[in-house]
Image (cartoon, rainbow, N blue to C red; front, side):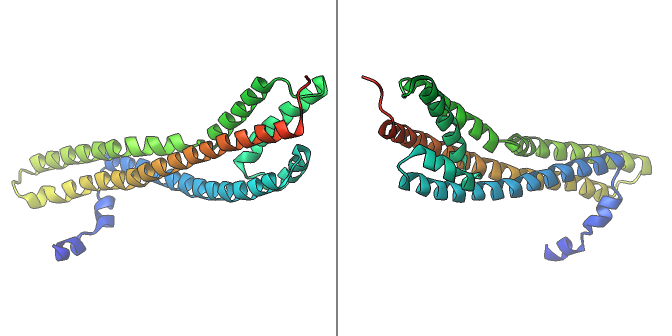
Length: 225
Protein backbone atom coordinates (compact mmCIF):
# COMPACT_ATOMS: atom_id res chain seq x y z
CA UNK A 1 0.00 0.00 0.00
CA UNK A 2 2.73 2.45 0.99
CA UNK A 3 4.74 1.62 -2.17
CA UNK A 4 1.74 2.23 -4.40
CA UNK A 5 1.06 5.57 -2.66
CA UNK A 6 4.63 6.72 -3.12
CA UNK A 7 4.53 5.83 -6.81
CA UNK A 8 1.60 8.18 -7.43
CA UNK A 9 2.78 11.39 -9.06
CA UNK A 10 0.07 13.92 -8.28
CA UNK A 11 1.62 16.71 -10.31
CA UNK A 12 1.82 14.44 -13.33
CA UNK A 13 -1.84 13.53 -12.91
CA UNK A 14 -2.83 17.19 -12.66
CA UNK A 15 -0.80 18.11 -15.76
CA UNK A 16 -2.54 15.38 -17.74
CA UNK A 17 -6.01 16.37 -16.56
CA UNK A 18 -8.66 17.77 -18.85
CA UNK A 19 -9.72 21.40 -19.10
CA UNK A 20 -12.77 20.96 -16.86
CA UNK A 21 -10.74 19.20 -14.16
CA UNK A 22 -8.11 21.93 -14.22
CA UNK A 23 -10.82 24.61 -14.01
CA UNK A 24 -12.37 22.84 -11.03
CA UNK A 25 -8.99 22.54 -9.31
CA UNK A 26 -8.29 26.22 -9.93
CA UNK A 27 -11.67 27.18 -8.45
CA UNK A 28 -11.06 25.04 -5.37
CA UNK A 29 -7.60 26.51 -4.87
CA UNK A 30 -9.12 30.02 -4.96
CA UNK A 31 -11.74 28.97 -2.39
CA UNK A 32 -9.08 27.42 -0.17
CA UNK A 33 -6.67 30.37 -0.33
CA UNK A 34 -9.48 32.85 0.35
CA UNK A 35 -10.67 30.79 3.31
CA UNK A 36 -7.21 30.55 4.85
CA UNK A 37 -6.73 34.29 4.39
CA UNK A 38 -9.98 34.91 6.28
CA UNK A 39 -9.04 32.34 8.93
CA UNK A 40 -5.69 33.96 9.72
CA UNK A 41 -7.23 37.44 9.61
CA UNK A 42 -10.10 36.48 11.93
CA UNK A 43 -7.81 34.62 14.30
CA UNK A 44 -5.62 37.70 14.66
CA UNK A 45 -8.63 40.04 15.00
CA UNK A 46 -10.30 37.95 17.69
CA UNK A 47 -7.06 37.65 19.60
CA UNK A 48 -6.53 41.41 19.54
CA UNK A 49 -10.16 42.04 20.47
CA UNK A 50 -10.01 39.64 23.41
CA UNK A 51 -6.84 41.19 24.83
CA UNK A 52 -8.14 44.73 24.32
CA UNK A 53 -11.44 43.82 25.98
CA UNK A 54 -9.65 42.64 29.10
CA UNK A 55 -7.52 45.77 29.34
CA UNK A 56 -10.47 48.10 28.72
CA UNK A 57 -12.65 46.26 31.25
CA UNK A 58 -9.98 46.63 33.92
CA UNK A 59 -9.73 50.36 33.22
CA UNK A 60 -13.53 50.70 33.21
CA UNK A 61 -13.96 48.96 36.56
CA UNK A 62 -11.20 51.01 38.19
CA UNK A 63 -12.80 54.29 37.11
CA UNK A 64 -15.74 55.96 38.85
CA UNK A 65 -16.61 58.47 36.12
CA UNK A 66 -17.82 57.95 32.56
CA UNK A 67 -15.90 60.93 31.18
CA UNK A 68 -12.65 59.47 32.54
CA UNK A 69 -13.44 56.16 30.84
CA UNK A 70 -14.21 57.99 27.58
CA UNK A 71 -10.82 59.70 27.68
CA UNK A 72 -9.02 56.41 28.36
CA UNK A 73 -10.99 54.41 25.77
CA UNK A 74 -8.89 55.74 22.90
CA UNK A 75 -6.13 53.37 24.01
CA UNK A 76 -8.38 50.32 23.48
CA UNK A 77 -9.89 50.86 20.03
CA UNK A 78 -9.52 47.17 19.14
CA UNK A 79 -11.95 46.24 21.95
CA UNK A 80 -15.58 45.57 20.93
CA UNK A 81 -16.58 46.79 24.39
CA UNK A 82 -15.31 50.26 23.49
CA UNK A 83 -17.82 50.44 20.64
CA UNK A 84 -20.65 49.57 23.02
CA UNK A 85 -19.33 52.13 25.49
CA UNK A 86 -19.19 54.83 22.79
CA UNK A 87 -22.83 54.26 21.87
CA UNK A 88 -23.92 54.38 25.49
CA UNK A 89 -21.80 57.38 26.38
CA UNK A 90 -23.11 59.32 23.37
CA UNK A 91 -26.70 58.71 24.53
CA UNK A 92 -25.80 59.74 28.08
CA UNK A 93 -24.29 63.00 26.76
CA UNK A 94 -27.41 63.69 24.64
CA UNK A 95 -29.77 63.20 27.57
CA UNK A 96 -27.60 65.25 29.92
CA UNK A 97 -27.40 68.08 27.39
CA UNK A 98 -31.17 68.06 26.83
CA UNK A 99 -32.50 67.43 30.33
CA UNK A 100 -29.60 67.65 32.73
CA UNK A 101 -30.20 64.07 33.90
CA UNK A 102 -30.72 60.50 32.67
CA UNK A 103 -34.49 60.02 32.74
CA UNK A 104 -34.97 57.78 29.71
CA UNK A 105 -33.28 54.49 30.56
CA UNK A 106 -35.16 52.67 27.81
CA UNK A 107 -33.51 54.85 25.16
CA UNK A 108 -30.13 54.21 26.73
CA UNK A 109 -30.71 50.45 26.76
CA UNK A 110 -31.81 50.52 23.12
CA UNK A 111 -28.72 52.50 22.16
CA UNK A 112 -26.48 49.98 23.91
CA UNK A 113 -28.29 47.18 22.07
CA UNK A 114 -27.68 48.91 18.72
CA UNK A 115 -23.99 49.19 19.57
CA UNK A 116 -23.82 45.48 20.41
CA UNK A 117 -25.63 44.52 17.20
CA UNK A 118 -23.30 46.61 15.04
CA UNK A 119 -20.23 45.16 16.70
CA UNK A 120 -21.49 41.58 16.34
CA UNK A 121 -22.14 42.25 12.64
CA UNK A 122 -18.58 43.53 12.26
CA UNK A 123 -17.16 40.47 14.03
CA UNK A 124 -19.17 38.18 11.72
CA UNK A 125 -17.89 39.90 8.58
CA UNK A 126 -16.55 37.46 5.93
CA UNK A 127 -17.64 34.43 7.95
CA UNK A 128 -20.28 33.68 5.32
CA UNK A 129 -17.44 32.94 2.91
CA UNK A 130 -16.20 30.18 5.25
CA UNK A 131 -19.70 28.72 5.39
CA UNK A 132 -19.98 28.87 1.60
CA UNK A 133 -16.60 27.19 1.16
CA UNK A 134 -17.49 24.43 3.62
CA UNK A 135 -20.80 23.78 1.86
CA UNK A 136 -19.92 24.20 -1.81
CA UNK A 137 -16.33 22.91 -2.13
CA UNK A 138 -17.13 19.18 -1.77
CA UNK A 139 -19.79 19.45 -4.48
CA UNK A 140 -17.45 21.34 -6.81
CA UNK A 141 -14.85 18.63 -6.25
CA UNK A 142 -17.43 15.92 -6.86
CA UNK A 143 -18.49 17.63 -10.07
CA UNK A 144 -14.88 17.59 -11.27
CA UNK A 145 -14.59 13.90 -10.37
CA UNK A 146 -17.76 12.96 -12.24
CA UNK A 147 -16.70 14.88 -15.34
CA UNK A 148 -13.21 13.35 -15.16
CA UNK A 149 -14.55 9.79 -14.85
CA UNK A 150 -16.92 10.33 -17.77
CA UNK A 151 -14.01 11.62 -19.85
CA UNK A 152 -11.85 8.65 -18.80
CA UNK A 153 -14.47 6.12 -19.91
CA UNK A 154 -14.98 7.97 -23.17
CA UNK A 155 -11.25 7.64 -23.80
CA UNK A 156 -11.53 3.95 -22.96
CA UNK A 157 -14.32 3.52 -25.49
CA UNK A 158 -12.41 5.38 -28.19
CA UNK A 159 -9.26 3.32 -27.64
CA UNK A 160 -11.18 0.08 -27.87
CA UNK A 161 -9.18 -1.33 -24.98
CA UNK A 162 -10.69 -3.22 -22.04
CA UNK A 163 -7.67 -2.82 -19.77
CA UNK A 164 -7.96 -0.79 -16.58
CA UNK A 165 -4.48 0.55 -17.27
CA UNK A 166 -6.02 2.69 -19.98
CA UNK A 167 -8.65 4.30 -17.78
CA UNK A 168 -6.90 4.27 -14.40
CA UNK A 169 -4.83 7.48 -14.86
CA UNK A 170 -7.93 9.43 -15.88
CA UNK A 171 -9.93 8.16 -12.91
CA UNK A 172 -7.05 8.92 -10.54
CA UNK A 173 -6.79 12.46 -11.89
CA UNK A 174 -10.56 12.89 -11.54
CA UNK A 175 -10.52 11.76 -7.89
CA UNK A 176 -7.99 14.47 -7.05
CA UNK A 177 -10.72 17.11 -7.33
CA UNK A 178 -12.76 15.40 -4.61
CA UNK A 179 -9.72 15.34 -2.34
CA UNK A 180 -8.97 19.00 -2.98
CA UNK A 181 -12.62 19.87 -2.39
CA UNK A 182 -12.51 18.20 1.02
CA UNK A 183 -9.18 19.87 1.77
CA UNK A 184 -10.83 23.25 1.16
CA UNK A 185 -14.09 22.44 2.95
CA UNK A 186 -12.94 20.83 6.21
CA UNK A 187 -10.83 23.73 7.60
CA UNK A 188 -13.51 26.22 6.53
CA UNK A 189 -16.19 24.26 8.43
CA UNK A 190 -14.03 23.85 11.53
CA UNK A 191 -13.08 27.52 11.77
CA UNK A 192 -16.57 28.73 10.89
CA UNK A 193 -17.87 26.92 13.97
CA UNK A 194 -14.88 28.08 16.04
CA UNK A 195 -15.34 31.74 15.12
CA UNK A 196 -19.11 31.43 15.54
CA UNK A 197 -18.58 30.38 19.15
CA UNK A 198 -16.09 33.24 19.59
CA UNK A 199 -18.70 35.73 18.34
CA UNK A 200 -21.28 34.32 20.78
CA UNK A 201 -18.79 34.67 23.62
CA UNK A 202 -18.02 38.26 22.60
CA UNK A 203 -21.75 38.96 22.44
CA UNK A 204 -22.24 37.64 25.96
CA UNK A 205 -19.36 39.81 27.21
CA UNK A 206 -20.92 42.86 25.57
CA UNK A 207 -24.29 42.15 27.20
CA UNK A 208 -22.62 41.87 30.61
CA UNK A 209 -20.72 45.09 29.95
CA UNK A 210 -23.95 46.89 29.03
CA UNK A 211 -25.31 46.03 32.48
CA UNK A 212 -22.13 47.36 34.10
CA UNK A 213 -22.43 50.53 32.02
CA UNK A 214 -26.02 51.03 33.21
CA UNK A 215 -24.90 50.53 36.81
CA UNK A 216 -22.16 53.15 36.46
CA UNK A 217 -24.64 55.52 34.82
CA UNK A 218 -26.98 55.18 37.78
CA UNK A 219 -24.11 55.88 40.18
CA UNK A 220 -22.98 58.96 38.26
CA UNK A 221 -26.32 60.57 37.44
CA UNK A 222 -29.50 60.88 39.42
CA UNK A 223 -32.94 61.28 37.95
CA UNK A 224 -34.99 64.27 39.05
CA UNK A 225 -37.55 63.52 41.76
